[in-house]
Length: 445
Image (cartoon, rainbow, N blue to C red):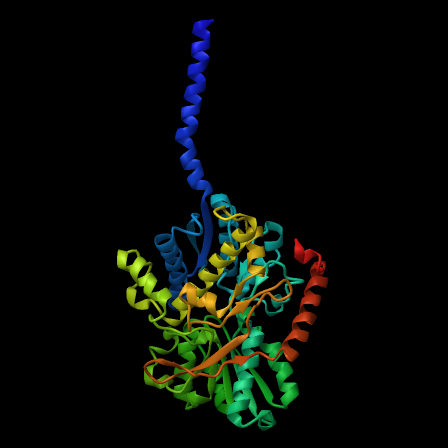
């Protein structure tokens, strides 16, 4: 009996020691918040997609190095190359959504991929952050519970461009009879602003000309032949990647004045103009964020990441327009996670569903942005159950041949135009998908 008891005691002790040995690893694994990163570092969109991706990854590294993660929870990530292709984007989503305990949030980095994932997110309970892109109707959080087009949509961007053009022309009445051409990427991304521009054209009696450009946009001869023939008073450029620099070169060759050209915020970064140089002087674009290394967040990235030879890309890329936007996107994802921890438990790993609540309850006023190191980088942002955008402000930047100069005036999209469009489009989408509009009671859960 004594031998048997000693054997059992030894077995229990060994089991206990084994659990002590294995539990730290299990604990470490349980304390990791996983952020899948869809990227495109190859193909015609790589020059724009790469700094965007590098900004997101460097911000994660900086938070781990400087802060030890989020309240003690380390951050992990894994990239998946989409090449900007919708089918590959869906494959990446399916491969990463359940890894490392489950995905926190997806930034599809593509309007086409966003469209494809919008029906999957409610089933998998993983939020989608589509900052400045994606489905414009997703601003309506009462229908689109899992989509967060933070800081703006293509409808708000189009509206602000019309506002600015009207201001430069001397008033909305001066737009009557004018020709405004939309040279756009022939994809869901490029087509998205059309309904808002059509609405504005009815209001102000300007002639809206639609000129599609086949992806990826390296051949625009036919498009700019149309521009040369119709001589529009203004050209809006809804391009991405190589399409933007090609359009500026064609405008130069055609003799179309660049100061009459206005790009979306995805057509206003360094890769779009640097190869054109002085040939792009006067070109304007929307600006969601500033650029430069002077903000504290960029200084911290230089110190804690590049200063440790851990930068994802070249050091001189830090603070560029798209790099900064990637940093902002990852900051918002992390702050949504932090916000979720405030409700569901600090120091705990948050589920996608909990982080979705965090996205819906963001409150980043100027004081908070300053404390995060984003002073002057972006506007304050506040979301709610009904409003999944949180901010609809943007400025205009102008290329002087060597650098972007951001104009001081902030424009806010006109909600009297945008809100009815968003509601109608959201209701239509919900009817087609048999979704039910959330109630006030739903928002409390």
